[in-house]
Length: 419
View 1 (cartoon, rainbow, N blue to C red):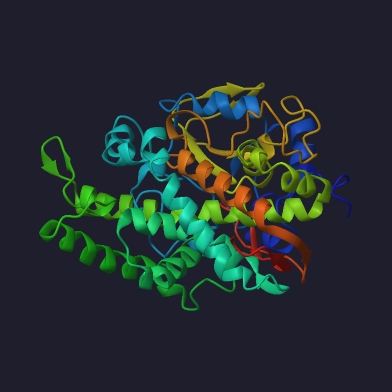
View 2: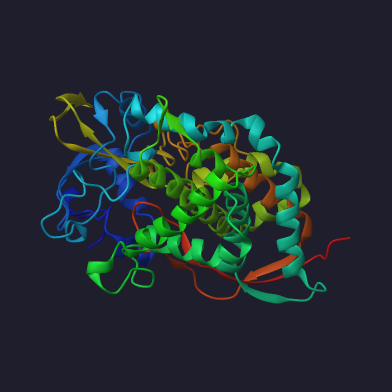
């Protein structure tokens, strides 16, 4: 049945399978924004939730952490993913910034925030320029046509190498970090998920074991890296509890590059689909800073977070009860017709661009300044060196509704060698 004819309750805006088959459900979100922007959903296999699809409503909910808490059900996951006899809401596998509430959230954020301020990130520009140029050097060859799988061979590398250098992870462990990240965010993807359901979170055990080695080494041999900061971190004069410390380290490691990888790969796909914008960027590489914001709006790598109402609340006339889950669909908000002129037009000079791709309020993305710099540098250098490009195969999408983007994006291109 046509999406426009389906009852609203039957719209699929959450299953990993549908995201993997066709990407983000923009047609469904458009109907919800128009007909029922605060809508109670009861999808098969999931606990019910309120779908919040409008820009203003997401800001309203996000600005009230005391009324909508992050602890508990902070993302929407299928009931089948819950181990028998356990509750992922009461006993989450990680306790990190995204599922903490104030004041605890602010206390833990301060442990690492100095590394992600605009001033701190600006000091990384020269190194990021070098990392990006080296990647393009390897891919350019002598300027001949080459075929690459853009997601794995290109988009993943720049943010991965930047965050691992910040953490002091050696280059030879890149593959390990990438695999753990894929298994974490692709936990419902048939390619990345572990085959044994009892071992679904086994990547966490591997990561924690490695993190334990890193942190123990930094306590004995301090360096000028973020791992050393965390290894010696204290809260109220006491060492940070190990579970929370490892969770914070893990969050920085995986979120510090995966979402930017998705923005880079989704950004290139958008440019391929809008060749006039690609040609404009090639003609004006200096537009890369503004283009980065439009790429984040267009791709919205973090699709949703969930909050739990702590008291009854009325939003757009809908009565949300205490204990209800409220799902904030940022990708829908970034196409809101009341906020963005021609929201389904990709325009690299869009300004102003009040997108919610980095969230809003208490949980505004810790790494937003780094992500912006990653995208700015990457797409400026690409524009300066790209001579020709064309698709080399079909796009494959990640089977995931929490974060999203292309899983494979094969292209043929010619890059100008440096110098």
